[in-house]
Image (cartoon, rainbow, N blue to C red):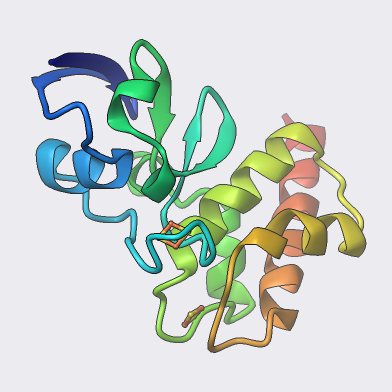
Length: 159
Ligand code: FES
Ligand code: FES
């Protein structure tokens, strides 16, 4: 069957098997491998992408469920060589080690700050509670999201 959607601002359309999962559609059909595929059971959060701005685990979403929707993957965060504040925060605060969880963490953080530009530590921890990091202990991830929130707020004040 045919499925059409927008991925990172580009219209895409393909004939696919109805059972194809969104994570495989994004990685193998569209060719964007930044989204990671980990547990396949909705536990780890490595596969999170945004569908119409909402964080969704793409390993348990059928590609056809994204028909007509706007998808954002981790590849959309950097624009013209400029990192998104959440990427910059992860860089500044050393919020990754192996990096496997990072695409999902970044997209979850991006969705949080779009919804709530000034989250508390508790709100950040709640937002990322659906994502597992085996390396960092989460402390630096939380600090990175706080860094991003502060720098986004400062940039808006200057604009
Ligand atoms: S691969 Fe989707 S939640 Fe782990
Ligand atoms: S940085 Fe390794 S799983 Fe998070």
